[in-house]
Image (cartoon, rainbow over all chains, first blue to last red; front, side, top):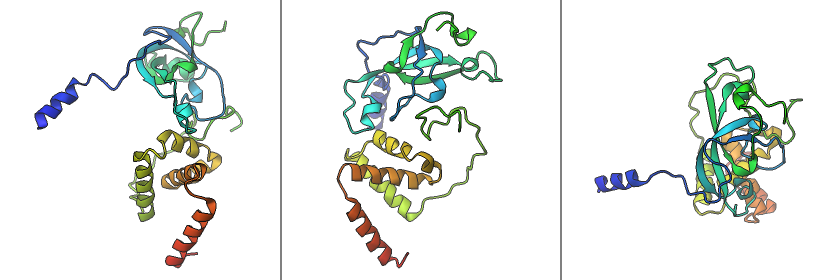
Length: 126
Length: 106
């Protein structure tokens, strides 16, 4: 029954999962940890140390940094979509100032941002 | 290379200069189809995880870009099967010798 299947699919809100106990909320300013530990890491080097804003809470997922070595990835880690200004991420960026880059990053890579907003570039105080 | 941060894997390319992209369809060689089928089956049976395969591929270091895509993923699969004790180096060598013999290859 094709119509039934279509209806079921539409009823699914999203693939996102609940994330009880999340540390950050939508709109919070965060800074990505500037750390270079060995191992399987999903946070690209170019975004480490940059400041962004929580765009959404994606859910809680088994930690891929543990799954990569055969462990079960528990406890699950909260994953966020973080929004950055391109000009902040790439100082030589030639595109419009309003251009953004969004990236999904796990909670243990995030710290609360302090000081001025990211539109002013990296904070000098930290 | 000199300003490459410590522990930056070969997959972590953001910000590096990029050349032209080869968009020609290379098709798949017979061994690539076989290797890919084996990888998919082991994944479906939850014997290997995609996260583990990615890690094993990233650990290839400078070899990563010297290998073609299916060579890289097959090397990663080899690493995991040895790591998990599902095959031994000796068994793999013996089987490869047998197959080479079958095809009269060096």
